[in-house]
Image 1 (cartoon, helix red, strand yellow):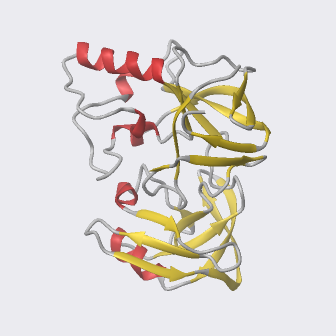
Image 2 (cartoon, rainbow, N blue to C red):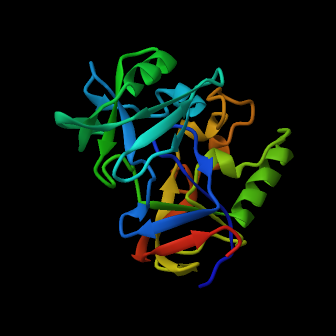
Length: 250
């Protein structure tokens, strides 16, 4: 199936603001650059989760370096932007907990630790994650315009005033201009890439947070996502069968 791409996005640092992209490169592990980095709580020895640390959404992180010389620009809620280089620390490879499983990550040698710690109000460290280690489900997430439209209609019918696009709440890799979610096993041609749909995606309280401020919103999505089996579902996961570049409008 060939599907029209209406939106693309990713976050370089796990849990931080999901940024729109004009194009995304998919390799066998998913979107290149997506959740390359994460923040770890030094005391708890665990990767920070957005649902427990909504202030992550107030942080915008952009790549301003190169593969040879990584450098990140971090913009905090007060509009201040700090750029700094980062590199794997000597003896920085450690295992941290992520949702009950081990995440093999590399602590970084960078001055950005202090920026992140100040913004989040706790002692955290920037780390580089092995591909997929801090991804909860499938590497590619997909939502459709049809499902978003029906959700908005259901919210309005319940008296909610929906003033902003809902797709930003779900932080999907790809938003497709389709009326229904493609069923598991469907192969989607997205520009140069081909992905295969796996299973519906289970959602958590993050979808009820404003994607920019991290504040809990008055428009609650979770009660409208409950499936017949009780799970909270929206969108589908996918795995990459053929790597390639995906572009908005393709």
